[in-house]
Amino acid sequence: MSSERLEAIDSGARGAGDPVITVREANVRFDMDKGTSRVLNDVNMDIQRGETLGVVGESGSGKSMFADALLDAVVDPGILTGEIIYHPENREPIDLLNLAPWELREVRWEDISMVFQGAMSAFNPTMSIGEHFEETLEAHGWEIEPGLERAKELFEDLHLEPERMLSSFPHELSGGQKQRCLIALSLILEPEVLVMDEPTAALDLLMQRSILNLLYDIKDKYDLTLVFISHDLPIVSGFADRLAVLYAFEFVEIGEANDILGNAAHPYTRALLKSTPNLEIPLDEMQPIEGESPDPVSHPEGCSYHPRCPLGDERCEVDDPEFRPVNDKHDVRCHYWERADEAVPLAFGGDSDE
Ligand SMILES: Nc1ncnc2c1ncn2[C@@H]1O[C@H](COP(=O)(O)OP(=O)(O)OP(=O)(O)O)[C@@H](O)[C@H]1O
Ligand code: NI
Image 1 (cartoon, rainbow, N blue to C red):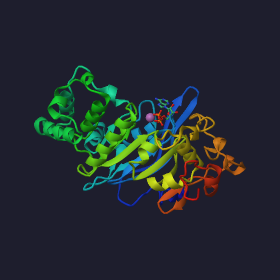
Image 2 (image 1 turned 30 degrees about the vertical axis):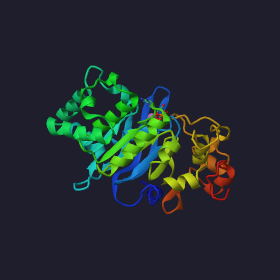
Image 3 (image 1 turned 30 degrees about the horizontal axis):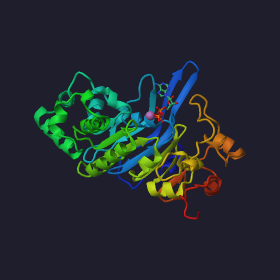
Image 4 (image 1 turned 60 degrees about the horizontal axis):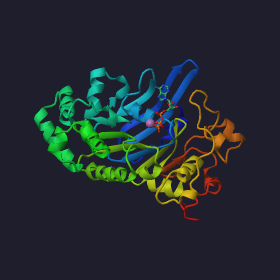
């Protein structure tokens, strides 16, 4: 690993100093007929124990690849390289990319659990919700009865009727109920980290917010670290402690959520803030981000955002910026971030000087 890269993870990406998962130089590639598709590009990240980390970016930016990488669950024939280390609270660190299949199965669910994108349709229609819980408990050699008692408590915490849920079949439930059942199921083996990839995308805005509020309420009770992935920046930002912005398969800005919202330093983040539907923004002030997102087979030279960036110049065409500090908890990969607020003003007043 180059020294610049190590520096790059010095502040923003590292957070406060008790990481539960450390990601170093993570890459995902698919070897395809038209060339090699690189869909996660040298990603570094420390996820801090107990935090809620929000990961945002446009569709196709690599959010799901990042989520899948955290559990070494990138689909075939994708190739994940780099280092993903899980740091349990009272055990030795675990190198996720060097585990036997049975060891990895144990870590998934019992240490790091995931609600996959689109998982609502993954319920088996012929099995009751209770049977889904039993199946998971059995597969991991956990006792059924105490497991179902825990399930009931989880249901109550998530404002669902326990008995009715256990005996229901997936088609008998609303989207919001199914989503909460999935969250309960993902917590049944008492994981320390819960990764959620667009867990509320198929739900209406009110339901999304109410599920996030419930998660927020149970997070402390279950001692959870949450990694929350979404294309919807306003939704995530109201909920996350830190935000990490993905552009073109790499993080371009990382910092405390409030700081990113009020003081976004990357032209892309600012464009994203401007373009994202938000209850607070008048519709006529929303602007889609101009230009195309990059092709994973041929990444642009230099800064990957330069073809779309109002600040892009000759330097940006050749020189890929490393992370630089905006403050001690906020890092950005842009040569000209100090001019980003002029170049991409936030019409709705995100900046204090507007
Ligand atoms: N199985 C696959 N084979 C090859 N390329 C893939 C595969 N799955 C995803 N990709 C590509 O990887 C890139 C990143 O995809 P990813 O699913 O991580 O995006 P995302 O940010 O999660 O998008 P969305 O918001 O739509 O879920 C995209 O260019 C996508 O086309
Ligand atoms: Ni995705």
